[in-house]
Amino acid sequence: MFDLHKRLSILGATGSIGRQTLEVVRELNLSVEALTCNSNIMLLAEQILEFKPAAVSVGTAKLASELISLLQIKGLTKSEIPEIFTGKEGLVTAATMPGIDLVMAAIVGFSGLEPVLAALDSGYDVALANKETLVAGGPLVMDLASRNNARILPVDSEHSAIWQCLNAVPDYRFNKIFLTASGGPFRGFNSAELEKVTLSMALQHPTWNMGAKISIDSATMMNKGLEIIEACHLFSCRPEQIEVVVHPQSIIHSMVELEDGSVLAQLGFPDMRLPIRLAITWPERPPAAYHNAFDPFAPSASELSFERADESVFPAIGLARDAIKDGGLSPCILNAANEAAVKLFLEEKISFPEIWQIVAGEMAAKRTNITDPDYDILNFTHHDTIDRICERYL
Ligand code: NDP
Ligand code: MG
Image (cartoon, rainbow, N blue to C red; front, side, top):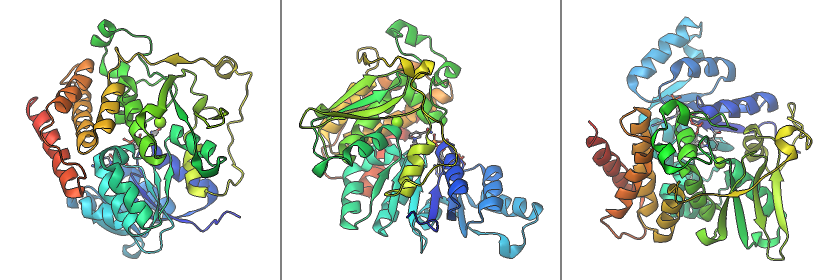
């Protein structure tokens, strides 16, 4: 029977995944021990009123004092206001609070790595949406999880699909993963057309409603590249075992070919609450109050199609494959360069193709051959890469 008393810490509660996690919390009547955000204290205040966490964390001390004023205006007494932490230490505190059953890692980017490592170090299970964590620090994260007997429960829809399929397979043995991709808003574009892409065009994803960074990653298909690396770590496989399949309807969330030739798939209408809910309730599957009932005759489901990704037009997938094959600091550099380039594109300082051109440039210029970087080396490399790239566009 599913334990309805599960206590969660939600890192990145104000984001797309964080908000949908709270929908699941509301539906299942779970308790929330901690919530974090970076700067959206207006929404965090609403969440505090509804979910009454014992602690929260925000980006800065200034935001913390603004949050206190906001909560007082909303009528909370001193004793009703949660403990408020700040900055990187605040995230680690939220991820390691006593009595947590599960940490939802829904921060975007490398900033999510340190609290995930801290949660695993405390032996806590982590529901992992924050794919950059595995891209930048995969070996560290997986090693810490196994040493502390902590589970990493995939939230990314494709990885949840693969995980669901593999749970029906003895010893998780398989030949190959078909990692599905919607193709993003620019499916079928050629290189000349990609030159003219604008920010608002890139932010429109055809099938999923997500945060800004992952929306741009989906448009460049770097999201699929990051997901190849994520899958290699989660399912202990080689990048050659993963084939990207463009599937514009986003009905099949991924497929696995087993050693006996059977192919398993997980499917349904796109709805991130499903993988979020499964990561929280695993190994149970309590009945859902809301249910986007699958209809195979619906226009989006009645004709499923599959195409090869055009890696000559979308080089990000190949760059990610190179990074995981190269190992060491390469995936961290790939991720950092991409974070910097996406930020510059969101600020309209670079063109769309410059995103992967910047990443390719950083990968080619890699200066070190460290094979097993620890967190401090990853952290230095990440920030050094971002600073050097951003300096060029001041
Ligand atoms: P959003 O941008 O919507 O939300 C990000 C969250 O992280 C917000 O709560 C934000 O706070 C917080 N945050 C951002 N930067 C920092 C920082 N430096 N320090 C602390 N907190 C920070 O992202 P998504 O919810 O879309 O994505 C979250 C993660 O999940 C990403 O790694 C993404 O790739 C992955 N994912 C998302 C999917 C989706 O459908 N959205 C699907 C699959 C994976 P604030 O609101 O204050 O800025
Ligand atoms: Mg995904």
